[in-house]
Length: 252
Image (tube, rainbow, N blue to C red):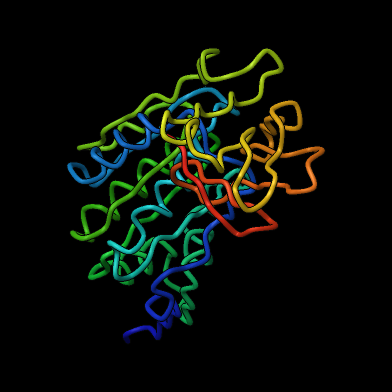
């Protein structure tokens, strides 16, 4: 008898992804290379020591490419999964698959993903390294439009897998306190009458001494000026005056 399998996955074209809570700095080269690799291979693994930023890079890539996958991008956190027999069930739950049969979870996954155009991010595979490799390889064999991005301390060894080592951030991208260095202003911005530290024809702008770089917030903050500015946008560096609403941009 054919089992009854239901899912809300197809209804969620753009599933919720982990929100960025800090500025994304220092990984533009890796992000570009990762995106290129994912267009060439259906299995890509980010490797590196714990805490180096693999998860952050993977979720950033997922956010960038998610509209290219009609059935969505799904980030599946595996750090808390310790028992191998729970791996496939955890993936099913993350994909919002509801199965009313008694078949093995891996079989249900194969059936559900067979025709899906989807990116699945398997995050923190190191605890169940071998089991993740076996499951990923089986899913890729059965679902020709599926792509998998994994993060692990070690290569999974899946057929056709490409790997991208994630090194620690270079000290060149950090200031002496270990936070991100401020992005340089472009020449056009430095000469702009509304640039930080210069006077605007419509309102006074902050003096250079009233500015500081806030690495955790990922931007410049005017600490003492009555006409404060704030950094906005996640692409090129842009500042908006809270009092006048005017916007300036610097180099990326």
